[in-house]
Length: 157
Image (cartoon, rainbow, N blue to C red; front, side, top):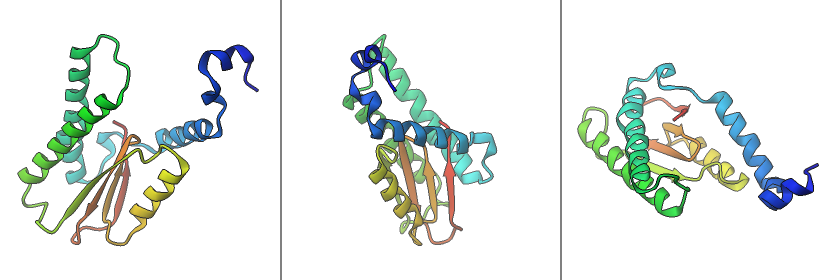
C-alpha cells in the first residue's frame, strides 16, 4: 500500500501496474546484464568499446555542457540515438572483414518500455534470421548475419 503523501508527491504513476512491471523488468535485466569484461565474443567486445562506451560518453558530455541538471527529454533521446547511429555506422564501415553488404543491423528503441514492447523484442530475437541481439535496457540492437551462430547478450552500459 502506498501512503497518501507519497502518492501526492509522485502521482499515481508509482502505483500503476505498468510502473511496477517496469521496475521488476529492470531488476531482472540488471541481474542478467554483463559488463564488457564478461563478453566472450571479440566482435561484441569491440562494439561495446567503440560504439556503446563512445556513445554514452559523448552524449553525456553534450548533455552536461548544455545543462547543469539535465532532465531526460525527447531531444536528449534524439541526440543519443543520432550519436549511437553515427558510431554504429562508423564501426560497420571500419570493420569490412566482419560485416558484408548483405548484413542488416537495426536499433530498436524502448524494448523494455512495456509488456507489449518486451513481447515484440522477444519475437524479434527469436526469429531464425536474427543471429546476434544485444539488449542494453534502453534500446536493443539486432544483427542479421548469416555466417555467425545465434547469440543474445544483455549488456550493462
